[in-house]
Image (cartoon, rainbow, N blue to C red; front, side):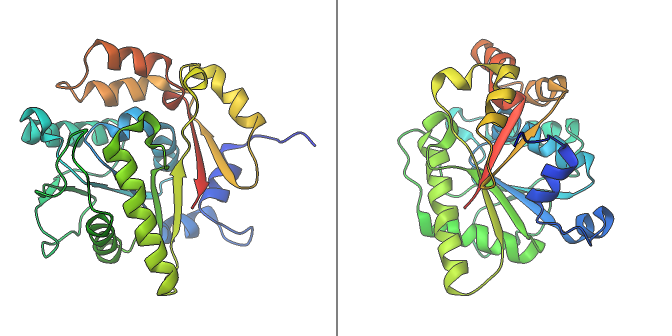
Length: 256
């Protein structure tokens, strides 16, 4: 039977709502957090889902596990992340930068600047350390649903993959402790599908199943504006990425 696409229906599926719950009640109860590796990940990869959640007035927080200081621009990139969030309508002003696990992680935008979580292709991040930061962030902010990368990290960036592994470590810990939290990972696709842009929407729906959630945004200009907030990173090849990437238009997430 052909599937009927409805943004509201799909978001309800993502948020694990029941027919007896009103959107208002469910959205007030659900608190979604995005866990990323670098400032700009939210704009490059997750904008369709974030924009859909904003539209449905769902509370969204962001935990960024590095300040992207590879080129010594960490402070600037934190400010750019704030601007990006604001452009997407996220209530993530007044970013909080923390260094150690004992720091306060409460807040809608928290950036970790830890010596063991340094931005870079050759830097290996600890699964346990990531898990501990995620656990504290979830606890202090009352998070009910997590979003993050999948095992391939979209661009195969080692930091993205480490974030997935750390969140998976946290997920295993939750299962052992019988703690209830929903975790969804963003699907990586092959190179051809990755750059089909808006055409990818039809392909994604064709492959959609009860195991995943596909979200589409008809307004890619907001994704462009969000990415342009990352002025230090918005070089020519990232401009091309935003124009042609499926992740500007489509997010497919699978429950971990």
